[in-house]
Image 1 (cartoon, helix red, strand yellow):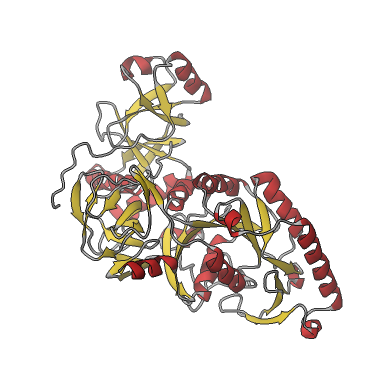
Image 2 (cartoon, rainbow, N blue to C red):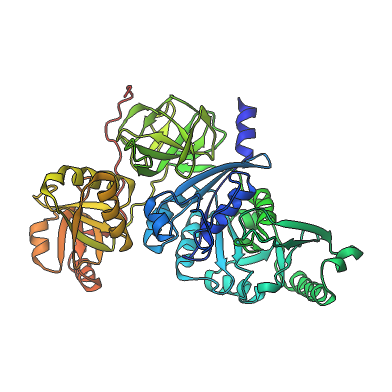
Length: 542
């Protein structure tokens, strides 16, 4: 078992792709699946000619709008590696879902538009990766169009993000003249040729050593001279590459290519799987948990309801951290304080699922959820004292009162709100002494309101109206003798309760928040929800 566990851990790679909207993240995801053999024809959501929707976009709203608004899990095998690709929402209004997904990843691929460079959403997500200390790999995309010079992009990474880069390969040409990439380690030029398939199938590729006399059969003398000049400049003035700096996130290995035309995708995938780390230890309340610990442990980082509309099911996405998961096994649920049965495990290709018998550290599996899981829950075999660091619940920035347009469908509305809040799609707050009458929803991005209305109507048959509120900040309140009645009387704020009954104050603006902090130094106003854990563990069957 020990040797098998070590072998399975070593062959796994679990990563997420981060980018600003429209940098080509969904297209790159499709092409990695294409080269990984998981699909045979790629459909880009951006191409006007595309006859197919992206594999990773499974919700009808995503297909209609051509955007990614949910996270999905994509799993495939390539070169004996078991790859777990965590596809994240591309729209910035769904960044909270991306933050949670990153908690389950061991590495991140940062996608940069060659023409636009580092964009605002990229900065935010980069900071999250930095906080977690995970390795960051950079793929400069859209070299099939004219963009900025590679050296300029390298400089921007250092100036804007504060990270040095090491180009693992170097582009030959740009725009219509983009011919291929040069592998600095192997000293090999990969030359690509488009064959009119619009990137739907693997691209023809020929490789030749830069030291071979045959190189002039592939590159012109001017292209070769420019390449040699660039390489010399990189070798003399660039950083040296070390695995230690890459693994610790101090140095980002950098790649160039075009996901749309498939140029450079396979060389990137090959190098990435060699350089990306296998699953590593995770911090718990009792110390680090090594993946080779023979006892199973994992945590829930995502809940998704209604992936199969016909069955109205709920799936809890769990990252396996240690040991071996076996179908039907029991594990201790830290928040509920009791043992539960981990039933009906699945692996995914977006919405398509396959029943599995077991899973190993690094794998992401879906568990059937009868309503007992929440984001951040820890599940551990034979241990009542293991809890992984919590997955953060962020403070919303937009708020609205929810009203049912059809009083006869109110129960469906309440059920939908409850399930979507457990997913993390929205946060539901109760007005004091009102229960679920006129609940308040809070979201991180305004587009989440549109998704909420769409899903309540199409998945629960409940049509709603949203009355926007004038608040822009929410803070959980911690401290003795907090009295909402006298506190709210001071104006520009309203106290509500979250799903756990914790007090939360909505503030109209920065001034209102600052005024409350100055006037009430005895209270703490938190931008992240306090963690709730079971207080009376009961190690009995579910």
